[in-house]
Structure formats: structure tokens, C-alpha cells
Figure 1: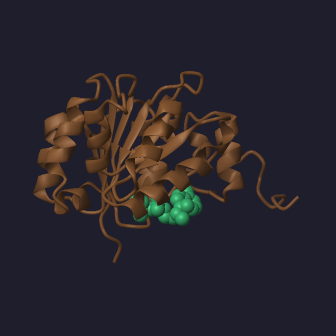
Figure 2: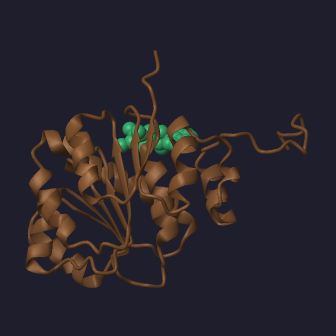
Figure 3: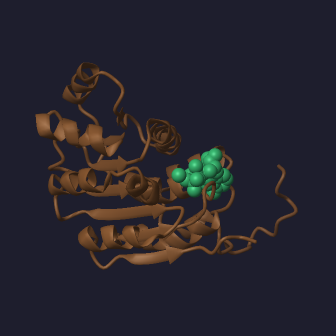
Length: 223
Ligand code: ADP
Ligand code: MG
């Protein structure tokens, strides 16, 4: 036992994951991953996002934004329903792969959650075959996601969580129109979470078009 120095009656601190309405298996998994405390963006956003709110969250790179959207996304998921229930849009393949890895680690407490990464640059056919086998979560770049939607190899009718990760970079890279088109394929009844390292005007405009009374959480740059 290493924690005998801690008084056993101590209430969880403000940044303790145990303050959140997370299932015990999820809390155990976070502990196994070495996530002892919430990062500031997690502590500020998770109480809102886990309550089902749409959210705009801004915090610098490396601040733990992935877990901040992955936990609500996973809690919204019904693992017994084998349909795409969550979509995460990312600007690049590298980022999509990192996000997929992090969601996989966080989803370990749940059995059999299937995550697919769909990015441009890879050939279509294997992606189409994977989609035909089904998935719970899709992570990908806007252009390739739109391509699959156009071919009807991806069906978002069961979607309940939409995440725009690195929204500022996606706009910089000229994905605004692709994102607009993808949105047309998403059910309006859903939770939308937008994450960004910076908050230029374009991000606010984008959010205004498709979010429902979003809560905004912005963390100032550390000095
Ligand atoms: P961002 O998307 O804000 O750039 P990431 O989500 O990629 O940041 O997280 C950065 C790193 O911090 C990752 O290696 C992630 O596993 C780790 N991390 C995230 N949340 C926590 C936490 N609560 N405790 C410890 N490490 C964390
Ligand atoms: Mg990130």
C-alpha cells in the first residue's frame, strides 16, 4: 500500500476524476492509464459535456483535449448497438491516428468498441470493407468522410456525438465547406463538441451555424 499517508476520509479534490459521473470501470481504467487528476481543460469542460451540453473548448496543445471529448463520447455510446454513433473530425491523418489511439486506451473498460480511422491518402476499398463490417466510432478527415457519405458507404443516421477536433486548423486547411457538407448528413438531435487550440473568428462562426446553445470554456495561455 502506498497511499497510507493520505487521510482516508478526504473528499475528492476539484480535479479528481471521481467527482465526475463516470462508471467505476472507467475510473479504474483512468487510474491504470496514470491519469491521476483532470487537466484544467478536462476539469472545466467535463462537468458540462457529461451533462449533455454542446461545448466549445479552447486550450493549448498538449492540455488533454482528447480525453475531454472522448469521455462524453464513450458515455453516449451504446456498445450493443452496432452502428456509427460518434464521429470525430480531425485536420490530418496523423492527428486522426493519435485521437484513435487515445480513444482506444480510454475505451478499454468497455468490451468490443470498434473504432475506424478514415483518412485521405489511403485507398478507398479497404475502408469500404471495414465500414461494411460496422463500427461504433469513426475518426477521420473531413474530405474522406464526405467521400464515404457521398458513396453511402458511411451512414450517420445513428450518430449521437459529433466532435470537431482542432477546429482552427481544419479551417486553416480549407475544410470549412467539407465540414458544412458532412453536417448535412448528421442527425440534428446530437451532442456537438468543438475543440480548438486558438479561437479565431472563423471558429466562432462555424460553431454558431451548427451548435445548440453551446457552453464555452476557454483557458488562458499559461505564462
Ligand atoms: P491536446 O489534444 O490538448 O493537444 P492530448 O489529448 O493529445 O492534448 O493530451 C496530451 C497528453 O496528455 C497525452 O499523452 C495524454 O495521454 C495525456 N493526458 C491527457 N489527460 C491526462 C490526465 N488527466 N492525466 C495525465 N495525462 C493525461
Ligand atoms: Mg488534440
